[in-house]
Amino acid sequence: MKIEKVYIEAPNGVRLSQWINVTTQDGLVELEFQLTSEPQLGTWTIFTLINGLKTTQEFDVDEYVLPKFEVNIKSPSYILINATEFKIQVCGRLVYLLFIKKTH
Figure 1: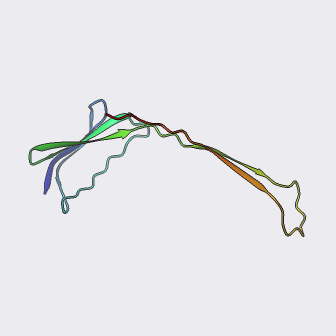
Figure 2: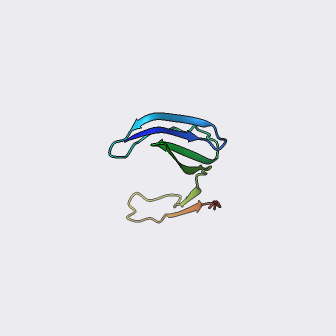
Figure 3: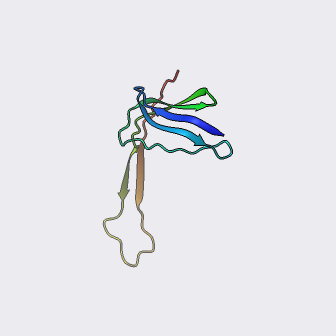
């Protein structure tokens, strides 16, 4: 099967990548498009044209913020060389922000 055209549009409607006459392997095709380090945020669209029929698939590009965490370790100020046991306390704290996005 041959896909006449595949292209990707940014949220502002600008076509950023396009493939013409793509041949599929058992009905599947793998194409790659690398986003920039600071891509335009919003809803992007993939368009395909197969046998004159145009289809679309949307996906969202959102900002991702890594979770913040801290680790505190409390240990004795000294440990004897012949000590068979000693006590330490490890406390980790993770701050995770959850963003809920409303979609139409």
